[in-house]
Amino acid sequence: MAAALASSRCCGRPALSPTGRGRRSLVRGALSGEKGNSFSWKECAISVALSVGLITGPPTFGWSAHASPLEPVIPDISVLISGPPIKDPCALLRYALPIDNKAIREVQKPLEDITDSLKVAGVRALDSVERNVRQASRALSNGKSLILTGLAESKRANGEEILDKLVVGLEELQRIVEDRNRKAVAPKQKELLNYVGTIEEDMVDGFPYEVPEEYNNMPLLKGRATVDMKVKIKDNPNVEDCVFRIVLDGYNAPVTSGNFLDLVERKFYDGMEVQRADGFVVQTGDPEGPAEGFIDPSTGKSRTIPLEIMVDGDKAPIYGETLEELGLYKAQTKLPFNAFGTMAMAREEFDDNSASSQIFWLLKESELTPSNSNILDGRYAVFGYVTENEDYLADLKVGDVIESIQVVSGLDNLVNPSYKIVG
Picture 1 (cartoon, rainbow, N blue to C red):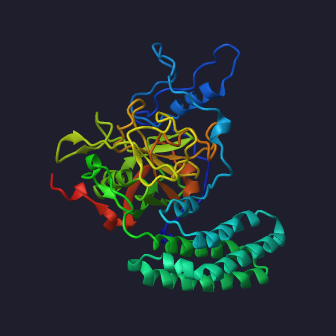
Picture 2: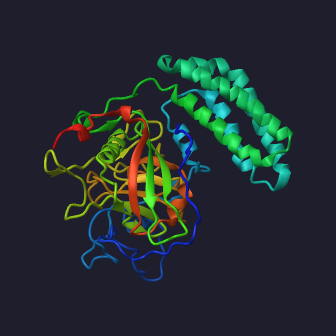
Picture 3: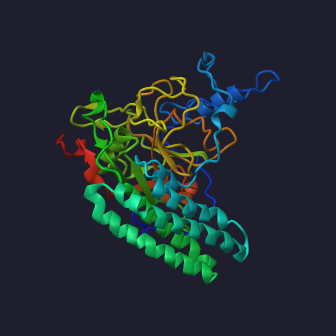
């Protein structure tokens, strides 16, 4: 799990209105006009999916005069919903790890439940927190041997050390609750869940599958990496530089994550402006000039990557097709659009394999894109989450500048890096 963000900060959160600037809108398609007096959830869902504009190309603020009805059918909304969603980015990353260790999950769950317990007003919340802590402590005591057995041999020493810290931390949290110190609960919970995440990462032994041969020579992130994105808020003296910590998940999106990390090492995004910020997404990655993506200087050609979707329960991602195109309407993605600041690749509307360098972060959860039934899931490749300062994404506007994106950890997990090739 990503280390704690030590020096980054965002000060002041004024309401930032869009400037209307930007050299190229990244929207193609908009909500269609009313047809008669009927209202179809399916038609509206399709319209919203396209109006999100997570694609490259010129702006279009309405259906083309030559547009024809879409063929793919969106299933009933009720079919897509399957239980309460997990919205915390760090929790999503923990559950996305390729492990199967029930013992550590039974420690993790009650610690995560503390968040809901703290929603109760006043010190009464501490009664629920105490039950959570006792449940986690009991699960750790009963399952410690199974947790130790689950550690990868190469990571055992670190896992054992962190496990000892988790034991001590639970005792400290119990004392915090007994002292009725409500304010100290959330920071300690975060610390303990970071320990849990580290232990779970130490259970992953190597990379769990082979990337298809046609993509095996691309930059691949075989594991996870953490980057810090520093953004300069222009023309606003009340807001200092913001640093967003982002965890890239190569276990579930090795091609997509590897492509992005390779571009980060090329300094591709440094100095680039935010090109879309409409309250629904923040988007960037469209370079100056006619190209709408990254041109590899060693080949002089545009580098594109395939759509890459890991379905929950599968052992390897699906490439080149949306889940809708495959008829997998009930499938849940391993990296869903659940969290504020979910990070994904933009692409051409009708070309699944056209993503290059344009990226976006989802901000808004609307009635048609609720967590766990999001019509973006399975259509666009999610490859990471903003885990620190994600709320400040809502303050960004078109024209704000990405000063830098720097790798904090995990660069050694990048294989076939093209940035090292001269040219």
